[in-house]
Length: 136
Image (cartoon, rainbow, N blue to C red; front, side, top):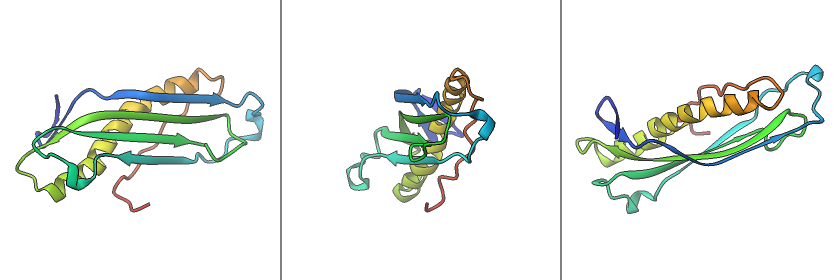
């Protein structure tokens, strides 16, 4: 398992879904709209988590799915098993999984999104940093 400051360990992430739909009718001369990026974090319900074992965390990423005048649309899903140090309370561990684990998973998706969008014939997209602490 990889370690982040020893409080969080994780297995190598696995991409289980990556769908890129290129809009061949899109005219880059018209310019690019601001990206529409949505995320969804999934993990077992808090009461079902066995804190002595690694916990699966899934991050789904959706780019431009609700827009038509875009060069591409992306839907992807990545996951890994995370283990939070036993000295951390369950409440704090849950928060760490929802924020730090999601940030780690996003960092593994970032180069894949850039590589695939660059191969689309349009400019490569670099995923921005996402604040998983926000309530949005």
